[in-house]
Amino acid sequence: MEICRTVEAIRDTVAGWRRAGDRVALVPTMGALHAGHMALVGQAQAQADRVVASIFVNPTQFGDPKDLAAYPRTIEADTRLLEDHGVGALFLPAVEAMYPEGDETIVETSRLAGLYHGAVRPGHFRGVATVVTKLLNIVQPDVALFGEKDYQQLAVIRRMVRDLHMPVDILGVPTLREPDGLAMSSRNVRLSPEDRAAAPVLSRALDRAEALAAEGAPVETMMQAIRDVIGSEPRAVLKGLDIVDAASFRPVVRHLTRRAGIMLSAEFGGVLLIDQREIDPPQETR
Image (tube, rainbow, N blue to C red; front, side, top):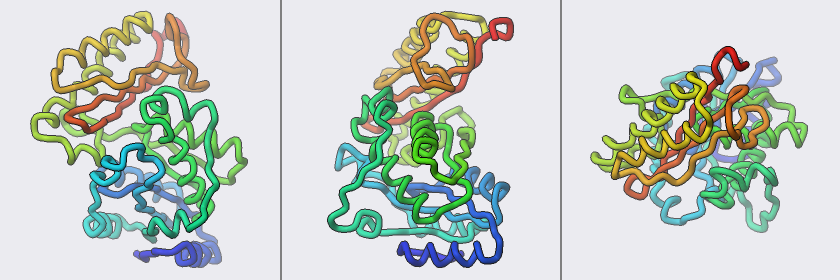
């Protein structure tokens, strides 16, 4: 596996692959890798001849400097894991490489960036869209893969790529979960033992909403059920809850008539976790 720390180095590596006629996939990450990231790598290998993984803890998507400082960094272990899984190149840039002195250009999806999870974390999706644009421009992959757990992030990236006519396919990969249902996340390592034991309440709340959707329950009934389940766990603080149309990303009211996405965020001991679930209406209403 080649380790590329500069824009020039990763571009040279990819150019060599291109000359050989290879199709290239990109898996952008912020490190602290786990099995969910390796699922992205596996899907990337099924989509392309060569895989680039990037590790960059992007400062512009963190609103709280303490959150940025606390984000886990495990570069040595991550590098071994990527190499063991057959990744062709690791792009490992410094902040100065991604945001040179005098850098002033941003990318933002004007509507999506301020909605839902974006209202909980102002500026977050502007930072995401900007850094992903940079990564796509630097690597110029044929396909880039992102986890569906970050449901709104995936929608922001798809909208950005569509609006800016970027020549890349964006592929979402289903969320991987721990045996107790907790969505795999790099943030999970920051949970205390007590908060880690409490955190699967997110998955249980989504399970309850999905069951109600299958019964044809109104959207407000599903949302109240989620609030009740999370409210039963004293260590959980609900921060965001939205049910949106999976295609338009607009709020769903009254009853489901087609596929929708539930987006959920909650804090456990000051650590913000997110989860999501796509749900369908009963068969007879589709």
